[in-house]
Every structure is written in structure tokens, then in C-alpha cells.
Amino acid sequence: MLHPLSSDYPRPERFTYPFCYEPHPLCLLAVEEVKQEIERIQPKEGKMFGVLVVEGMTQGDGSPVSFLAAYSGLLEGRNDWDFFVPPVYDAQQPDGYFKQKEREIMASVDHKEMSQALQLWLFRQYKMLNARGEEKDLVEIWQDYHSSPRIREKYPLPPGGTGDCCAPKLLQYAYQHDLKPVCMAEFWWGPSPKSEVRHHGQFYPACSGKCKPVLAWMLQGLDVDPNPEVQGLRHQEPRIVWEDEVMAVVDKPSGMLSLPGKIGDDSVATWALKRWPGAMLVHRLDMMTSGILLVAKTSDAYHHLQKQFEERTIKKKYLAVVEGVPQQEHGIIDLPLSSDPLNRPYQMVDYAHGKRAITEYRALTRVTKEPSRCYTLLALWPHTGRTHQLRMHCAHEQGLGCPIMGDELYGTKADRLYLQAQAISFVHPASGRKLHFELPAAFDLEHLNPCRPLFNNSYNSQNL
Image (cartoon, rainbow, N blue to C red; front, side):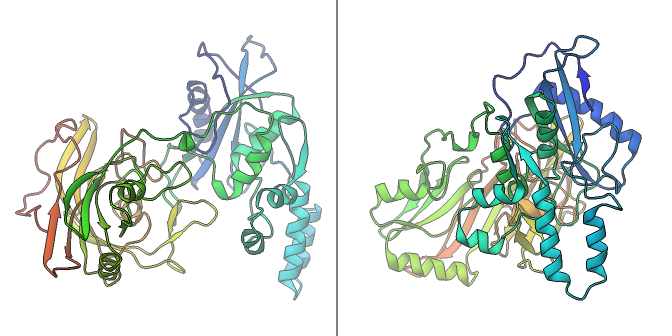
């Protein structure tokens, strides 16, 4: 299970914060070896894999560090592949208690109550360690972490599969064998699941729903990197595009919150309140999206503009640079979306319970950042306003299959999220006049080396 890692790279000062990180070079080296093992196995399904670099047992070649490897859940129906660490608890033994009870339940009429009792028993078998050598089972960990009665009532037990993801398996094995964790990374290999967006070979943070409560326990006793998302952001201010006595149109910079949140009060809403007492944001943008926001200075203006949003008479246009080239110049994406309750803030395509989400798009220009990589400048018109709608519709394989450049949730990291709320049309809440505002493109297309137009069309980018 323990694989030598020969490298002159210095070890990190602190262990990886698993929910937001850049893979350490030692992890990158380990991943290359894991990929060779994956190629040998040739799995047909997409799967999350992970590596944990450890100290504590010098190898025969004198390597001071080694690495462990894991996969989430089962791999090709098995949990006993030689190269990888074993599960925390093996529930797959045909003659074991779990499988015997599972067969009894299948033959019983009272499936639900017996299934819950068996699931409770199973979670009690997962005795998770932390770096101090302390031990708790998954039920104790879950109940200690979730103090909210609402969450405890909705999810009295951990979700199925908790404890079987890469990170808990890796840390558990390290603690059991007196190995000191150094750094960790997880990556996706294979085709994406149908409901989510996962890109082959890309690194991902640990999931928040199943893993966050467990890792909050298991990491106790380790010196862990701080969460970069709560370190605060540089102070920024929106730019006033236009204003009168009842409202304002402002340009929000990328990296600024629309509303105050857990990472501080530096937001468009707090900035507006200081400038115009009683001011209210009429809508919002994701933190990393730049562009137009409407601010109401009076209650009447706020309710008037809100009604226009509710009736979908306000028209918005976005610009985005996406990775790759859409198959069609122009089209409509119609994919229902819902939040992933166990992995917020991710959204997923959900035909059973999702809300309808519709986006119109048109490809404007092809650009290139590197000779081997193509990008496309798109105009996007959201006909509905779902969370992460444009980001999911661009990234998901049933949408464009072209994630927005810099989208850390559904694509790859860049210097910013290349998404801008560029234009808006609405009725003025006092005068009743139709107003239209449009910003210059926020992206330095010269820096992205625009090449020949991708499509021959007479599309006018001034039109909403």
C-alpha cells in the first residue's frame, strides 16, 4: 500500500486544506504513478482517485516520503485492488453480517425500518481516527458536527457512502500505521456522471456533504493550511455606470460579493448602503462574475424592479469565454437544475426534481491562449435565473460541454472567472421609460490572442 516517492521538492509547511487547494508538486508526482495503475486496471466508469503523501517509514531506496492511493467507493465492483488502501470497514464480504442482513431485508416486507437499522449499525462500524489518536464512529461525528435541529431532522444519519471517499480512507490508513500526513490531492478519472460536471484528469476538493464533517474530525491534531475562502479579499469598489434619484446601475468587479457573507462585509450591498442610505440590491451576481447590478434607492423602486424580474421582463446579456468550441453557432440549452444538498454550492442536472433552466447562446469569436487550446467568446441570454445556470449550462456535457474559463467549480482555475453581466434592459421604476445599458467587454481579448472569426454571421452584439 505504501509507495516510495523520490523527489527533491521541499515538503509543505502545513497539511492541505482539502476543500480548496492547489496540488503540491509531491502530489503531482504521486498522481502520475497512480495514473499508470489506473491504465492497467482500465476501469469503465468515472471515479474519484486520491493520493496522500506521508512521512514515517523510510523506503528501501532511502526515500524520506512515500504515498498512499485510494479510490472513492468501489472500483469495478471491488474494494480490494492491491495498489490502493483498503476500505475503513469492509461491508462487501458475502458472508459478513452486513450482506447477510441485506439479504434478509430484501426478503422482508418491512424494508424501510430494517434498512435504517442496518444503516445505523454500519455507520457504527466506521471508527474514524484523528491525528491525536482519538476515535469516533460516523454517527457520533455526524451528530457532533451538525448542531442545527433542521439538518439533524432532515438527515438524522450520514448520507450513504460516507467514510468511503478517498480522503477519509487515506487518512485512516495513515493513522493506523503511524504515518504522518504531508499533503493530499484528489482527481477525477474517466467519463463524467450524468448529473454532475467532472472533467477527466482534473483535481477536485473533497466533497462538503459526506466528507466535511468527517474530515473536520480526522484533521484535528494536524497543522492544516487556512481556508483561503475566509482569508478576506482585497478591498474593491463598484463603478457607478448611471444613477438618478430612485436607482443606480453599477458595475461589480470580479471577486467582490454582491451581499455580505461569511468571508466579510465587503460587498456591493454594504458599499451601496454607505453611499445611499436605505439602498437595496435588486438582484445579485456570483462573487467571481463581474458586471451590471441594479441598486434601488427607494422601497417603491425596489418592488417595481423586483416585479419585473419576477415577470421576466428584464432582459440580460452575458459575455463568457469558454474552453473549447460549441458544436453549433447558436442554440437554446434547456436543462433542469437543482442544488446538490450534500455538496453545496454545486448544482446538478436533475430531471426528476430540478427547476427548468433555459439559456440562449451565440458564439461570437474564437480565441486562443495556447497553440493547442481553443476558446470561444459567447453571448449568453438567461431566460430563467437559476443558481449557477450559465456556468452549468456551459460546462455540462448535455449543454455545451465547454466550461467557462476560470470556473473553479465546473471547469479549471484561471486569473478570474471569464463571465460578465454585460448588458441589461428594463423599465425605469418611476418614469416608465425603457432603459438599456451595456458595458465594454471585461476581458482582455488581445491577451487571449483572438484569431479569425469562428462563424460568418451578421450578429449585432449591441442587441439584447
